[in-house]
Image 1 (tube, rainbow, N blue to C red):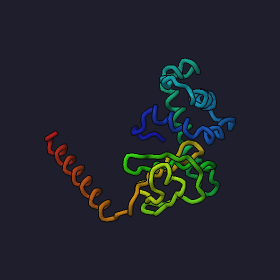
Image 2 (image 1 turned 45 degrees about the horizontal axis):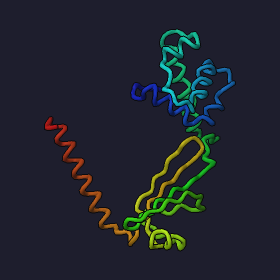
Image 3 (image 1 turned 60 degrees about the vertical axis):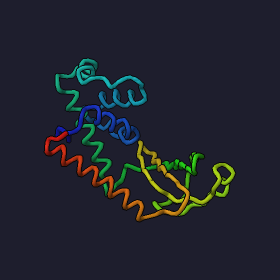
Length: 190
């Protein structure tokens, strides 16, 4: 599966991030059960990932054997993630983090919403008027993060109306700065 672009650390992090789904691969008669158990046991460790040589020594594998097994685990894991006929990658938990800023005041909420507001939507939190001085906001940014079977949706709320023209202008300026920078890099000026 590895086409040379993913580092070992990236692949190990992916397997650990999908630990619940990775566990489904265990006990299926595959040659990678021992190394998969090691990766899953290391998931919550604060230590760095073991090197491939350390895996090979611990599991009595030939040189290059650990990477080959890790790549095989990752390929099988991605097959599970992409199984459209029988989905196995299921998000069971959704958590919303809401960041509200009004002038110098700010407030953070962690909750579960039945519906996620979209970019530009107006929201009204009457209970926030006492905390930040306003209750009407618009969604200025939305970010989705997937970690195992949990989706964290972060919403940034700002006071005032959502101004699509202002947003377009800011995005255009950022794009033009980035294009200018890329052009300088291509021309060897940076």
